[in-house]
Length: 199
Length: 87
Image (cartoon, rainbow over the protein chains, first blue to last red):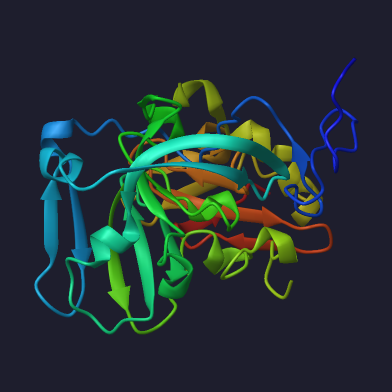
């Protein structure tokens, strides 16, 4: 006899109502969305940098991989209306990264190979809410999904989880990024359906 | 592969016609970054992102960002120095 989970609506493409935000549908594949060509930065040239008022802090790939790592299982939600449940990632918590920097900033701008940027309030990426991920589903993160490393902020729409991340700028002001400066919401909470300006 | 997702400027012909009422694929855009002049039809287009991105075919700079919401559209053409329309 099939087991039916409480909270499952049972129709294809839907999922537990407490895990699929309004306007979203569940997918089992991992769609690839990209605003440009996929960068292929060699690992020996890859660095991760946190810029703040003080001297920037930079890690090489090997140094970054030596930082304390975490494995997390999270649901992700794309503003193009798909959600994917129970995705498994490996990476470094932003709490760990920001612990290496003295600052009094309130926001960050993530910057990436290819020129992409996105903005985030620090309160939304600290206390176990965000990671720089280099592993997905037990394997190195593939370039088309943002490898060698991408930001992972699963409680916000996935455009915030910037692919091909190379660092953050810490700052006092919330500076709109690539999509946020042309229509997309400054924060992007999927449970509030914060897709566009004014939502 | 990224190239499999890359389209050419003909992919935005219908969208441009809807927004501006003119055929834009035969217009010439000049890249603000590298100065290259190209027919819109020859530009590089990515449409599977949260918006439509048009890039210079020479330096890959972003020329246009187009975001469509159900009742609103945002356009950023700041990567273009000029657009020349044939009469």
